[in-house]
Image (cartoon, rainbow, N blue to C red; front, side, top):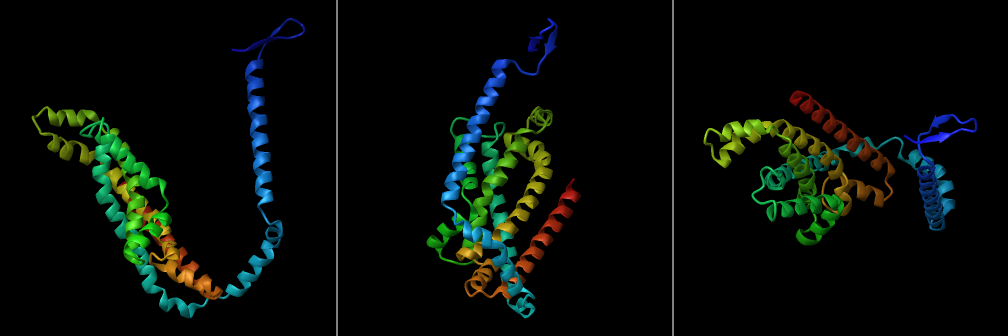
Length: 272
């Protein structure tokens, strides 16, 4: 405990000693200097006239977008259905691939911690590190534009997310249950089927619903790069400055996201 001596000779407790205080001040000054330098670089690359004029531009767009063009709703049913299909099929595909990756990544189920586990972890990191829009752009160049490219992009993006949470759940299981099953002479696969899988099923269900909810949000914008869904209608309306149509599309997207959130909340509450 740092203690300093007062002028009258009494001992007083202090939270940090002089060296720690100087160190903290030093790093604080460095942080402030870095912030000022970054702000200057941002300021040099920013056209502040447009920033100050942004409220009036936003007000003008809002006025042009009001009221929404409700008659355009007839052309949005199929795109929003495609968006929900992209999110759902992409999530299912990701879960099918994520389950074996998770078992290979978990320390207590991987066949080899030296070779297999690093490969599984590399798959998890690589699929999580690239945004779904980037995957969609790559897949459109490979397999062409359309809903299928969006489904594959969502699936690849979701593998790492689902596998990471699932392998962490596998590593946190109750070992006593698996040991009890193994003591009966059960094989490795029987231990996995009757000792591990039942323990991770609630986590698996929660991860699945949570990722599906996220994928609904991500799939709404994949159409901006040509991967199908309602984002394609949004991109077309933005290109022709049809602001009433844009307003209606944003409302439909909001309702789809709210619906997905409601469904996921109900499923999670039923699981928990």
